[in-house]
Length: 375
Picture 1 (cartoon, rainbow, N blue to C red):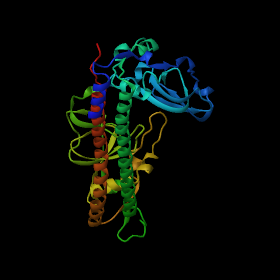
Picture 2 (cartoon, rainbow, N blue to C red; picture 1 turned 90 degrees about the vertical axis):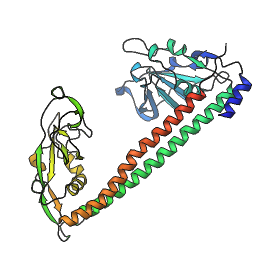
Picture 3 (spheres, helix red, strand yellow; picture 1 turned 120 degrees about the horizontal axis):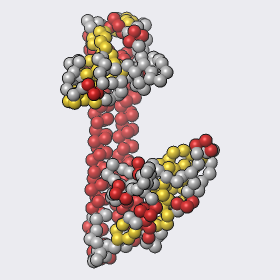
Picture 4 (cartoon, rainbow, N blue to C red; picture 1 turned 135 degrees about the vertical axis):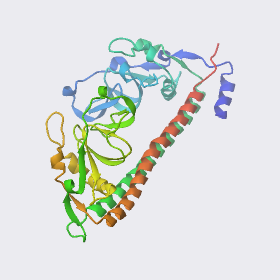
């Protein structure tokens, strides 16, 4: 930062001039061309729309380095900044993204990529459907320091981006390794040589657990609160103020895209479109959960029906699962729960770590792109 401050002090002591974006870039929108999906021929060249790559086609319109700015108002970011895509190489662009090319004597395209990230364009989106038209795009005011200052800013912000990408790759690899390790031991502990292992018996899920059905209600019938409502998805659909189950439970979604999905809860919940499973004298509930997660693909494959698929409780309860003596179940649970906790810790920690890096990047980006304005 001291280097940047020194550059600004030396090269623009009286402030930084702001310019219209249209004076800083070449806008190549006249060369864009949309192609309907049915008329596209598959190929290797990226086909870009308002929010990134939509397809790959056999021809291209642009070659080189370009900055794409989403034209449709519907793809403006939550903070009001425009949707930006950095594109390198041969590409095709439809008429839903503006195509910007560098004017190297005025501004670095990469600098403008960062500068536009802090511009709120929500107020200049016009029409139905809303669009960031080329006229308003050209009139966006951008601070334009000398090229040497721009290069120094780009170097710092690119370093932040590269560090974030490296961190994400490392964390993703670590998470994937732990998931594979967990799956390996789960398969080995629960399913290997089921019929030949001593003390193992096969038992229908209906005999190894107690099943209860959820209570059908609509969201309008419920009062908002802090109790999760389980409605067929992988996450709570909403939250209410009453529960229909307290304590530990396994929940299996009954219908929809995630029919058969198994989750474990140890808090008050309200289950609507799903089955609630509790343990009986034969099973440890966490053991039962690990067994069912090991069968997750099979449970999903039991979906039936057109439109909204569903799984039938009667069929699910006939599934045979391996049941070992309770002390052995507890031993298996202690091993798998440790792996499960490790995976969950990384799953929670990964977004938190990336969010911290993103905030750090945004802090320095905003600081670097804030200048005293020239008179």
